Image 1: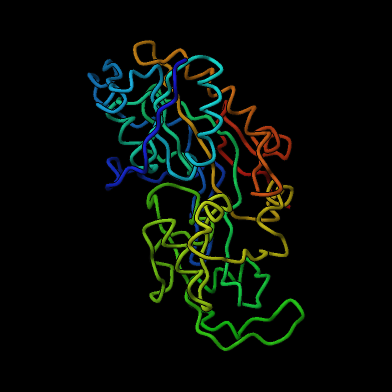
Image 2 (image 1 turned 120 degrees about the horizontal axis):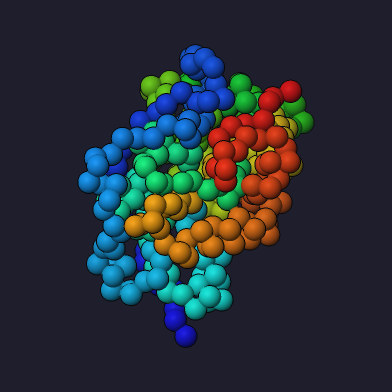
Length: 343
């Protein structure tokens, strides 16, 4: 029986930077204190040299040593969620699938070098991700949760309050109220953010458009474990991460997800209707040109889109591609490219 092989988190800077295009669903640029661009235009391709287009896939040493039938590199967030599905597909189809854990930037870099069959992203495609012959497929979205220390009595924030916290306009927790309308301790707010994928659309840009709009008092972290650990260690802190990563890092301490506009992050129906407004987009890529296309890749994508529907939606806040379509989200082929009209 052939086996699945995977390796630990890849360390290093992103190998491929991306630029931001105007979203096809957004007519005007975002102003101060507003959401940024959420998607790029799938009809636009990033120009690559002619010789690049004819270059075949050449695995790196790790995938080559694994004698892989299919090689995938994925962002750590999507890796944790989708790896069990990939493993089952590999076992059921007697395939050796090499899966590398990394970042969206590392995935884009290896695709640009043509050293992997597939890439996995927790963000919508950036302009430079849209290379000739590369297609994006959306598994679904997952709620981006905001959370505080368990001792913090605050349980609900409006989107406006959350933006003002991260802009530094709300500076102390005592400016807010408890669920019962009572006072909150007069603690300074320690806002923590991980401003990853700087030039990709979506993710933290759903809160504020540009990094310079965040408060100068903002505490930036570079990793998911640091985010969880710092919020768990400080009663003054607020941070954000998907609930699957909170669970994975629960050994670092407890945090308390808060409602946004009255809705919990694990309320998948609220997320599908955008009543809960913050999310990440889980994408996988395939090559369509004959000289780089892997015959197993599209079969895996089709399988994973169906299997994503079986994930624990009400535990983690997952919304599958089929539910998004039913709710009016915009797709180009298999790729999510726009939100539904807001009521």
